Image (cartoon, rainbow, N blue to C red; front, side):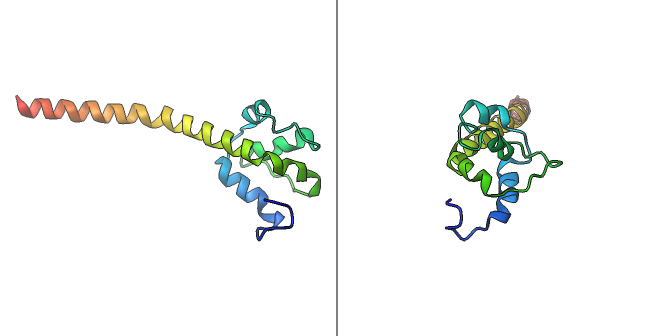
Length: 108
């Protein structure tokens, strides 16, 4: 994404980031992957903290942050993936155990 060179207006950037981040705060991951190592510095972490009660108008002073979007997306994906695993794997294990118990019981 290059500022002013694609079809997606800068005005939609906050909504896209909110959606990608699933409304979560990913600042610690983003900081550890160098998201703030730009000319805009800590301002770039704004894109990583997408809790619903926060809104920051974006202007061209955030342009250096665009070079770090891949790092941000990696943080979003990894943290959401880990959260899903914590939630759904135990649920799947319980279902599998219950299903196996039912099969064994029917075989007796």
